[in-house]
Structures are given as structure tokens and as C-alpha cells.
Amino acid sequence: MVAQQLASHQTRAAGESLTPVNFLSYFLVQLDMRANRSRELIRVAICVIFLAVASAALTAQENPQQLVKETVDNELHVNQQQNYWMYRDSDTEHGKAKVSRVVETPECWFRWMLSINGQPLTPAEEKQQQAKINTLVNSPAARQKDHAAIEQDGNKAENLMKMLPSAFLYTYAGEKEGNVRLNFTPNPQFHPPTDAAKVFHSMQGYVLINRREKRLAGISGTLMQNVDFGWGILGKLDKGGTFKVRQTQLAPNDWEVTTLDVHIHGRALFFHTISEDQTEVKTEFQPVPANTSLAQAAALAQHGNLNASASANP
Image (tube, rainbow, N blue to C red):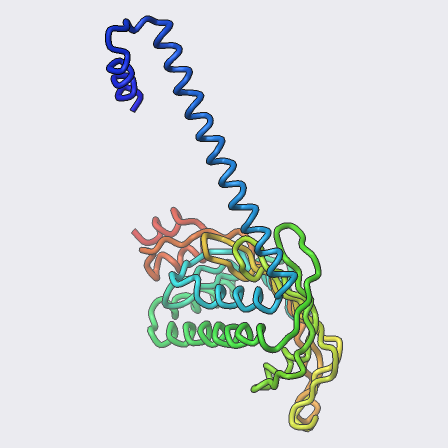
């Protein structure tokens, strides 16, 4: 490009010799022109980013319901291509702390327990873990059952996600670290269609929406009243129960739940106690290669190392 411009310069300056001074003068002019264009592009980019941020902030303050609707739409439709991950899962439920390594595949998820209450597995427990993984590798029926359970959980979460725009009323409550906070209270005009929806609709709390991506970064709720099922005959959940969910961006358009904290209590039919006390934290995410076989994924769950899994499955 510079050579072409230099040739043009020489043509325009016919009869004029290209002295070092002339060349240096021309080169400095070109550099100054390019610097001006770069500065202009940077200014334009800054203006575009500022306007996008200002627009999102304005939407959050003037029409928080619309921001929630757009966010839910992104959650349900933006990530069409499924990514699969290996991660460390720390799950404490009813006082029992389990740490596992999880490897996701299109057919099933492999889980290898690393410790229980801070203690490594006994030889008998390791044998049980190995038997479960071998069953998944060798049994299509076992994989289908595991996949169905994963899909069922995903469908339940999706159904509750779809409720967000209509089940609650939102008010703008500020911004922090790139997230818009919207407080929510139950919408009295909404009629929950299921028991799960009834519990969800009895909560009030807040959502965190990533301003730039318009993705759900977190949601926290507290059960503001007792929730009865079958006029209290079938069961009741006690007022004061809480739940908290956090999502983290792992890849473009891929946000995954990394923290789940649930504490809900009550009773079911014949005075059976309902007690859901669970804190789950997922860390150390690594992508699982698309061409990973079931045997390699199983070995990866056990060893936590792609090289180890490859050597175990040449």
C-alpha cells in the first residue's frame, strides 16, 4: 500500500527528484494521516460502546420488565451449540460434603468421587465408583437413563426461567461490576400452573443481569410465606426458605451455573419432613474435546488429565 502511494506521489511530482528530505516529509505526512484515522476509529468505537451501555442502563431503569424479557430470551435461544466441560464439583448436602470430578459428554455425564467430608475414598468406595463408570461406558440403557435425568433437570430450569418475565414485578436497584440488579416481588396477576411454579412465585428477591451480554448472572430469592399443597393436606413449605444461583461465562454465549445454594424446609404427606439443604460450587472448568470417546471421557473423569486418559485408552 505504501509503495503504491509512493509511486503515485512520484507521478504527481513529475520532474521533481525524490530526495531523502522529500521522502521523509511524505512518510511523516502518511503516518500522521493514519494516526488521525486510528484516533477517529477509536473515538467512534468508544461512542458506540458508551451508547450501548447507556441504552442498557436506560432500559433497566425505565423498563426493567423488558430487560428481563430480553435476558430470558437470550438464555433460552442464544446458545444453540452445546459445549461440554470437565469441572470440579463441591456439593454439601445435609452436612455431607462430597467433591467430584465431572466430565460431560453428549450421551451422559461421568462423575468420579474424589473425597467425602474431606477424606479420600476407601478401596471399597473406589470400586463402587469404577463399577458405575464401567456401566455407563458399556450400557446404552444406563446412558439413556442418565441423559434423561439431565434433560429433565434442564427442562425444569427452563420452565422456571420462562416464568421470570410474567411471574414477578421488577424495580431497578443499581449496578455493580457490570451487572444490573433488579429487585423482584410476586406479580399478583400471575397464576402459577404447577406446584413448583407456586413455590417460585411465592419468593421475592433480586436478579443480576450482565449488562453487556444481557445474560442472567444470578438470582436470589426468599420464601415470603408458607406454601401449602392440597390446602395443607399434601404438604407445606415453611416461610423463610432461601435459594441462590450464580452463572459464569465460560465461553462466548456459554453461561453455566457455578453456584447453587438452597435451604428450604417443610413437611409432606403423613408429616414426612422436607429438608433441602444444599450448597454446590463448580470450579476448574476445562473444555472436553469434541472427539472424546466414552472410554476416554470415563478415564478423564477418573484421572483428571487428558494425557492420562489417552494413555489409558490408546
